[in-house]
Image 1: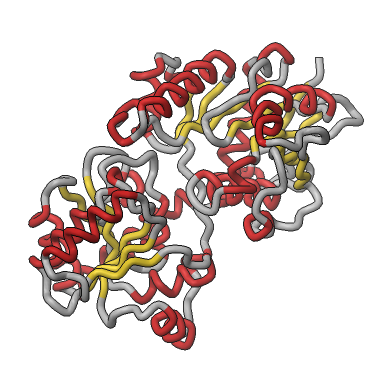
Image 2 (image 1 turned 120 degrees about the horizontal axis):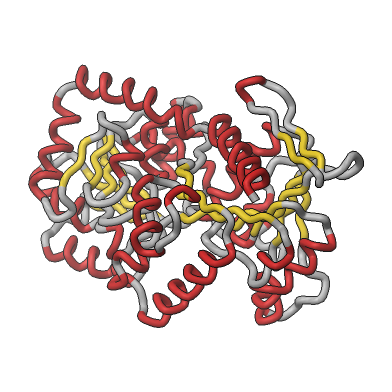
Length: 402
């Protein structure tokens, strides 16, 4: 029987998998989100692929996507020789592409000699287990089961059906937080010893300094106020940005709130509250901001607020800490895992608590600096090299165990 060996990074050796003496170890990935999603699941996939490609050039990483997607997103992938995009040859309609991703891709995986397949967004193609191809699935969250009130009933039905089907096909599951692992065990009944927590990989570009000229240009481009707290994420009910808006009257009048994210119907609710309480001049909405402008927007803020009621991880918190911002977030999910012990946390309905926490981190420059320094140390566990190492160890475990 062919053997599979991956030497650990701790030994600083090149990992090499030998299915036989002539064949490379080929890992397939569900790459739909990589090619289409600008943030969230797409960012997770691109960052992971880039880190894996840099970690071990001997691996072949094949990205199976229904189509080429967004060119701007594709170009965020490194131009490494071991990254190979794969698209369906005969699927032209949306229905055909959906069928290929959910089932038809299995034939292509077998054709290409894929040894292990990684579903990056909680899904696996139907029938993959019968092929003998080993599988790993990343589950980001089960919000649709914990808080179905934030979804349409039909969507909840579809998501649960996909989740149950995936549990039958998966060899092992990667949860992006301890909170998500607990949810999978409790709500899915999947064995805890077949779930590993590997935190969401986060690049280090937000750690890079931003010049004063860049900051001034971005401030001017988006008409940013001199002093503001920043909130980044889709403007939807679950993200609970209204809590930050309601905290504004309890804060100094020269402190504004910048809300950066794609608007939904919930955004109209937020705007109506802003208008009713005459806060229009202090609340600023941004969306469609290019990725290249984000670091300067973060760096120009004074504090980052993330009042979400429930998350699988909370990547914007990591970006904020890398940008040397103090963080105020909410309890109730995994945000304490992302932000660490030196960020502050309040109940998602506690308006005065949020205002008090923001005032606290802004009041003392010494305390602010100390919290940022300790938080920067804490988030090192989320950086690419460690995530790539742990994921490769996960692949080894899957191959050796089954």
